[in-house]
Length: 86
Image 1 (tube, rainbow, N blue to C red):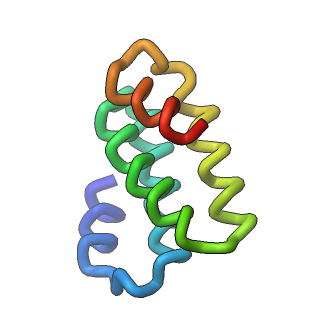
Image 2 (image 1 turned 30 degrees about the vertical axis):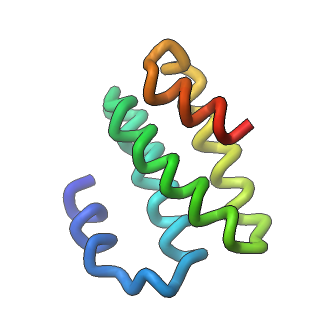
């Protein structure tokens, strides 16, 4: 996760679709690592980026993230993201 986070920190932000996809994998990785607050923060960014992109792939990744975060629905940060993405 640190490597992906470092690379994304230097990634060209004008590549919105690619950034949303890479961040989606990072969000799931944080959820898998039992870091729901961090996963929620990244998921929020993915959702925001995806709203500006007409891409079925990014929409599918948002669905994957939401499904993965459902396990942590009792965490306030996650609950906020799930509610906003509904």
